[in-house]
Image (tube, rainbow, N blue to C red; front, side, top):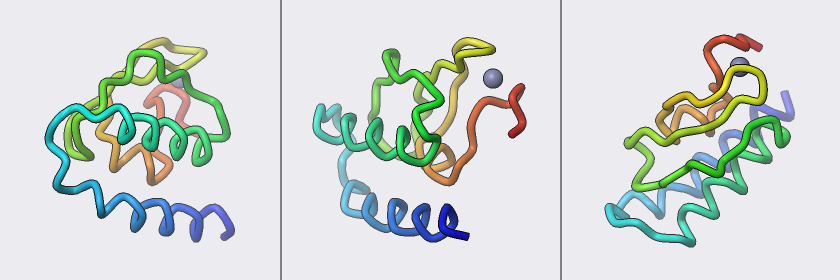
Length: 85
Ligand SMILES: [Zn+2]
């Protein structure tokens, strides 16, 4: 239940970034910080190139390697397909 409410606050805090369609290092760092919090540091974000919430980024699973995912889904707790946890 506490995870659910923290996801909602992260999602709403990112609405201010909806107008960013160019690469922005600050926005990328925000994405990585929030993702580390949501997924408790499970994934690696060395290959992330954040453009906007709708554009796929590359996230690295420690067990299965790289996968593509939309940032808005990753914020909601969606991660590696193969882990299914
Ligand atoms: Zn995995």
